[in-house]
Image 1 (tube, one colour):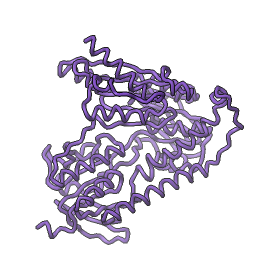
Image 2 (cartoon, helix red, strand yellow; image 1 turned 45 degrees about the vertical axis):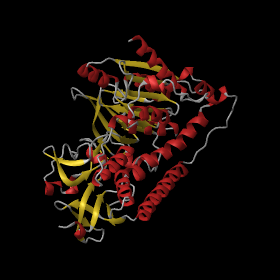
Image 3 (cartoon, rainbow, N blue to C red; image 1 turned 90 degrees about the horizontal axis):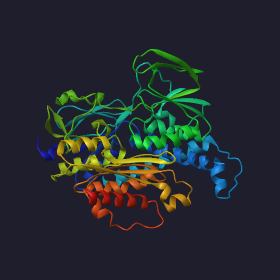
Image 4 (cartoon, rainbow, N blue to C red; image 1 turned 180 degrees about the horizontal axis):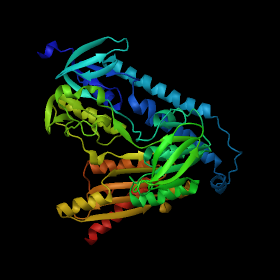
Length: 481
C-alpha cells in the first residue's frame, strides 16, 4: 500500500490527554489525522478525573477554610457559620468539564483533525476498525496508529458496585449526594483527595487500606507529617492491613473486613456509602491487539522509550501507544508528553521520554507532590553504580510566607548525589506543594547540580525559598564529602 492510498497519515484511538496532544501535534506538523473516540472528548481526565475533582477540591477547600474558626481567629477574623449548596458545587464541576471538553474539541477541529465517533480497534497492520454509534462498521487505513485508550477504575473481587451507594471516582465526581458516613477503600492520591472533599463537606470518613500502612505509595517522611494533618487531625478513622473482602450495596452498605495477610474475618461495617479508590486498570481488551501479535502485561501495552509498541521486545513498525494503557506513570501530563514523543518519532525525529523528571501531585489541603526517585530507589541506584546519596530536609516553619499564611506545617525532602550534586528526587508536603515541585522537576530534567541551583536567587518572601534553602543545605554536604 502506498502512502498516498492511506485514509490518514495518523489515526489516534482515544481522545484523552495523550490522544489529544498526539493528534494536535501531528496535525500542526502537516499530517492528515483522524482521532477515534467512543465516549466524550477529553477522556478520563477531563470528564471523570483531574478536572472535575479539582473543581470539587477548590470548592470544598473554601468551605474548609471558612469553617476553620480557630485558624481565622488567629488573623483576627470571625466568620459566620458556613453554608454551602451541594448542587451548586456539583454544577461548578460540571460546567468546568463542559467548558474544557468544548475547548479541547474546538482546538482539534481548528488544527484540522478529523473527529471519528465510535469504538476503535486494530484490524491488522496499519488498519483500524471503527464501529460507529449507528452500528455501521468500517475499516480505515493509516500510515501510523497511536493507541491512547486510557484506563478504568479497578474494582477488586468481592466488591459489588451500583453507582449510587458503592461507586468509583467516575461517579464520585458528580457529587450527587453527601453520605453521612462513607468508607473509602484505598489511601492513594484518589482516596486522599476524596477524603479531603468529603470531610470538608461534613461527612464522616473511614479509610480502609490493605497494605500495612496508610498512604503506602508516599515517601515515609512525607507520610508521617501528612497523615497527622490530613487524617488524624480530621478525625478520619484510618485502618491499615485490612481488606474489604466483601462489599454489598444497599441501605446501609455492608463492608466485610478481613486481615490482609491471614484473610481471617475482622468485622463488618455498616456505612451509608463506599468509594472504591483502589487504582486503575488499562482499557485494552477491545483493541483486538492479537491481530498484530501484541501480548499485554496485565492489560498494559508494552512500549519502548520512543512509545513504539513491542512484540517480543522488538518494536512493531507504525504502531504506537501512549498514556495509562502503557502502564508507565498514570498521569494526564505524562500521557500528553508521551503523545508528543510518539509523534516526534513518527515525524522522523529521535525523541525519548524522561520519566524521572515528570512530577506528581495530590491536591489535598495542603498538597503533596513528588518528582524523581524515592530515597530507597536512589540508595539502590547508588549502591549499584558506586556513588553516595545525600538527603536534606527544608521546613515550611522557617519560611516567612508560610508563617504569614499561618500554614507553616510542611516539609521538603531533597535527594541528590554527593559526588556531582545532581538532584535525584524531591518530595513535598505543604502549602502549594504542587506548584513548588515544578522547579525541582525542571532541575532534574536538566540534570542540574545543587552547586548551580544554590546560586539562583528566589523571590522573598515566597514559598519558593523552601526550595532555595534545600539547595543550599545540600551544597554544604557536597563541601564535606
